[in-house]
Amino acid sequence: MDLFNMIQDLSKQLSRAIKLMAKYGRDFAESEKNYKISLRQEALKLRAEKSMPVTLIQQVVYGVPDVADKRFKRDVAEAMYNTAQENINSIKLQIRVLENQLNREYNNSNRI
Picture 1 (cartoon, rainbow, N blue to C red):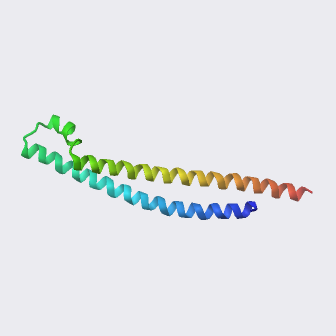
Picture 2 (tube, rainbow, N blue to C red):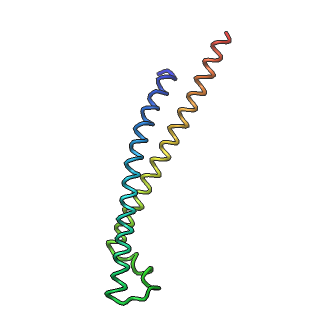
Picture 3 (cartoon, rainbow, N blue to C red):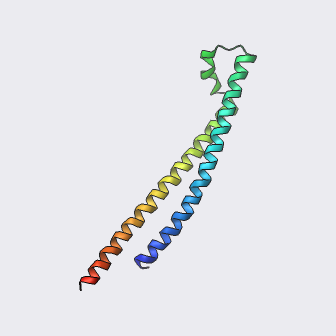
């Protein structure tokens, strides 16, 4: 496969990766929203129903199973988003390397 076709294939991969990153970004935002809502609800419950001191709520609320589950989902969504971002950066770097190589070969062929 020649350099131009490799660049074209990487460009297509980049487009797919950007769409995937957008999906992961939405998933991350949704997970963050759900986590924050659950955290607030549980903190208010602990304060109202159990008359727990405010200073203890922050320590206890993270151990509530629903909150912990939503925090885990949020963290996984964030990791997927960051991975997609790194994949995009990697593809961009590969494209730049191939473009530089293509330019060098093109310039060298013109000198002959």
